[in-house]
Image (tube, rainbow, N blue to C red; front, top):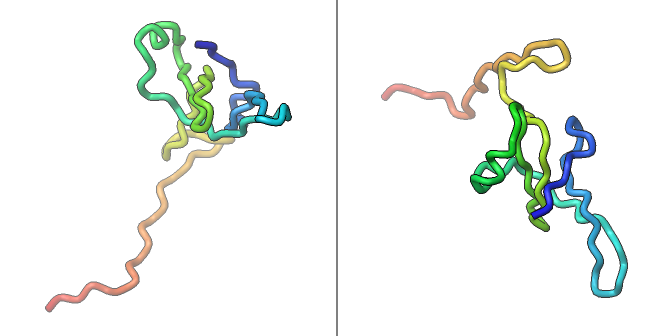
Length: 96
């Protein structure tokens, strides 16, 4: 299995594997990359600190790159994300 490296870990979200269709025309896969949470043990042993595998949802190509966590409470661009207050419900709750 060939493991590709992310070209730009900060902004790459699509697969860049070239494929050839039935007519011989070459194009990019452009499938969405998702974090691969269940890689085989032999691949998991090759990972360094702060790295993870990403897998294309269309062609199954495997990429290796840094972990990108989009969770609340992390610092992004020198500012801290704060939890948003809950939205009010559409229908007010009344006690019967």
